[in-house]
Image (tube, rainbow, N blue to C red; front, top):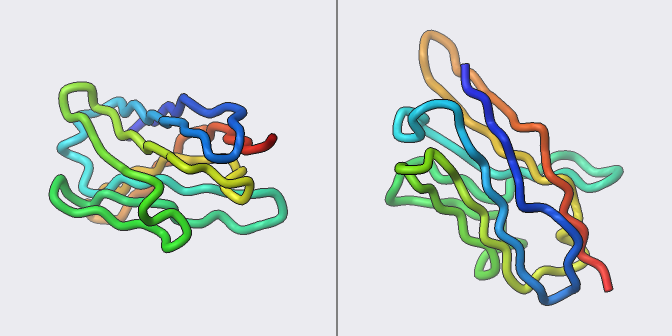
Length: 118
């Protein structure tokens, strides 16, 4: 079992920045894959960024060059630094952890609202 708690969402103007945090209940180095997803009203949940290992990251095309995913092993926390925010980035952002065992297990946080508006 893994508990994930997101924080850092809020209201920001276009062009602004936010940093989301996802605190995990277990050693983050034992979690093979962590990622950030988002879901806008009326749309499906989509991958924003993932960090399958400390040396590689993946990003949705829509956020490349603007968002950065990282993790701090000492704090068991994954971050999503979001710069140059656009109105279309407005969504609920979710943190996800994937653990491989006999089955592949997925764990989700409760989500944090990000609203980009002037």
